[in-house]
Length: 450
Image (tube, rainbow, N blue to C red; front, side, top):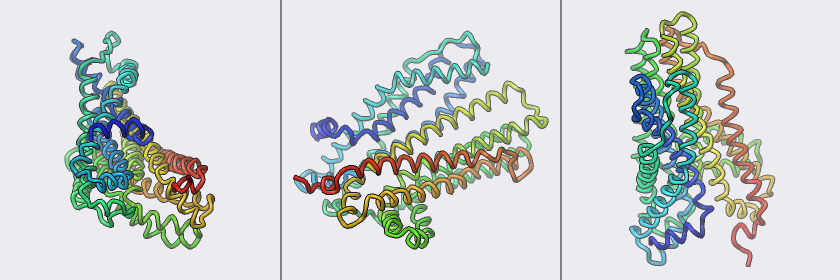
């Protein structure tokens, strides 16, 4: 099975691009923040060491959580797309353990190669991050940037271990009977472990919001310690529950979609109901992008207004806090945006056979494109809606604790800007990939040509 895994990687390189991209980006971000620990260990002054360690531990820690979450999601999507392949291996005598070893070897090789290739990118991103800290006078100008064992060790080690742990979840699907794996329909219900873990993350975020109000009212920027985490936890929890969210929104929109969308609307509703698990892989980064970006940017805007109105925080400390928040939201938002495009392209490309079958049964290319557009619109709407709700776990408690008000004093353009970015990325990636997939003749797409 090890030999088969290596041959699969060699002959199906395109099928592993999504996983490679996720692990490459994740390793790049991890190395960039971990390099600050290399720099801090190079005999710098105590103030610089504290700044670098804080940035690496807080920002890098949250990036680690989101990166691991996104990589696991990508690997799960890739495993679902290979159900038929796994079933064929099972049908010719391969045991679940053998197939599982093959997937583990594939994941390990892809993760290791991606992490090694990401070393130059991690060095470059880490240097840019370090330069930002120097230019904002948070790090002394004479300190030299270091990229060493800590950065490479964390980047490669965490990426490979995280990918292997993620495969433990995906390989559980192999235990199903081969005949069941050949069926395209997905299970109607989510696993109880996923539901429980999702709600626990939501509860953790709500708890952070409550602690912000109860413990940090009048404490100034210290309220960010708990408020900043709240939207991240809630966003991650709702992302895990995304199959349920898709089904709920689809149930509400089913009537207008089928009534006004014609054949395309009917296909949209049918696909959203039948493929909610795969659609959830694309919904996750939309929720994370919206929730984390909106929550952090509004929180920082409220803090800036409060400081301008007579805050007592030193200017240097305020600058440190703002830089930390903007770097975190920038890194996570960029990663989530790239993961969104990456996931949608991979998921839509995989549906080339499905599009061919629909065209052979009478659907026109225009109807298929409109179907994909409607699906993307539902995904974008669902992601922005629940991401916005997740951001309230940070916005409302911090506003109350910092200003004794319920409505935040923040620029009104923040939410529309984030929503527009999420919608444009979702629609462009999905429709553009579908348009390319439809260039393949229908008979060729379903494998009917000689």
